[in-house]
Amino acid sequence: MSRRYFGTDGVRGLANAGAMTPELAFRIGLAVTHQAAQRVSHRPRVLIGKDTRVSGYLFETALSAGVCAMGGKVLLCGPLPTPAIAHLTTSMRAEVGVVISASHNAYQDNGIKLFASDGFKLPDAEEAALEDLMDSAKLDTKRPTGVRVGRAERLDDAPGRYVAYAKATFPSDRTLDGVKVVVDAAHGAAYKVAPLVFSELGARVYALGDEPNGENINHRCGALHPDHAAREVKKRKALMGIALDGDADRLIVVDEKGQVVDGDAVMALCATRMIRKRKLRRKTLVATVMSNLGLERALEAEGGKLLRCGVGDRYVVEKLRQKNLSLGGEQSGHLIFMNHGTTGDGLVAALQLLAIVTEEERPLSELVGEVMTRVPQVLVNETFEARKKLSQMPKTGTAIRAVEKKLGKHGRVLVRWSGTEPKLRVMVEGPKEDKILVMAETIIEAAKKDMV
Image (tube, rainbow, N blue to C red):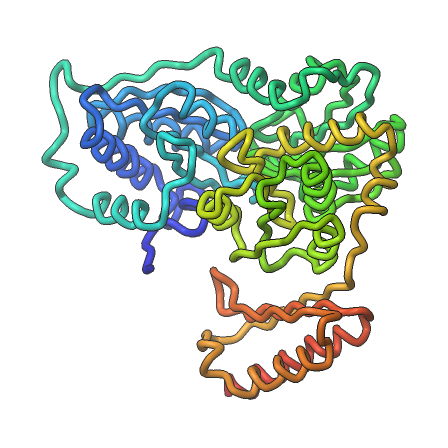
């Protein structure tokens, strides 16, 4: 499906340049309010949250103006995690939820992503219809006047509402009394709420990345730089470190030894425990094609199975909804617990992990070491002038089949084009890293011949 503005996770780019301008934000505000007005008889409610980038003020104002210009009611939440906006959209009975954030990107970028009234991200078809509406003159002939012009107000208790929601996902018969936790909020959207969630459950929190200035979001901290949290974990002798990204929809975990635990290992631990408690629907976990083969084997050892989908948390959610499953995620740290929410939530995921560690009274490093053995994995990228369908690259296909034959059931090959640039990505998993690296490079060399 051809897109003009929206990518795999909303609109994103350099703030106040290219497509990412206040003019575009204003058109989005107009369009989502007009669409919502066709579905409801009352004044459409649009809930808006953001992260801590300095350009957030610019886009918050432009979006609000667009909503009001189409007669909607704006509920401004200020800096809050993306999953908080998804939750509040449903709990406040809003027609649309809007997040102003560029997630893990540097502060110069910004983005806009949308949630429907059910708390899920808009499907591709609805985003395409929204783009058509934004580019049409229809919006300019439908604007109300007089008392029908919209208005905006601040939802002052939005942070408290989200903190209460997140805490409620932790087992009610347990506390975190006496537990030391390092929380790195990346100077981002969770800088206020993240420390509160854990401290109100009884934990002793050592907060990092909680002093945003509009320019330091994700800078040498958070999920992109977990070494910051790792040093603090070892210094404080903490049980766990929790490193969030700029909008707090994903996390990277650090164990008590200061070692980084990736999303695959976290999913393996959570999924196997849910299987044992008969809480993982159909004993099936959803993960992307990038997740390690070791995750698949960990599930099989517990009688479960892994269902793979395309790269991107929205595709994980789509598969979860399609198959009516309860848990999914990405290697990068997006974890979706469908019993608790509609999108990835770093704080909720961290609480589920803390529940396991405190219940079993064993260090995270031990639990992870037992549940999953990571299969060596290499990723080799090659950029070309343009892309070509893999079906039209015979030498590449021959090389892939040869590698798959050598690996047999002991490994896996994944070859795909990047979604944003003409970059071919070759991932190979197998018993020995030096050998699979040669295999990946062989596929790249074949691709070069096909691209001549």
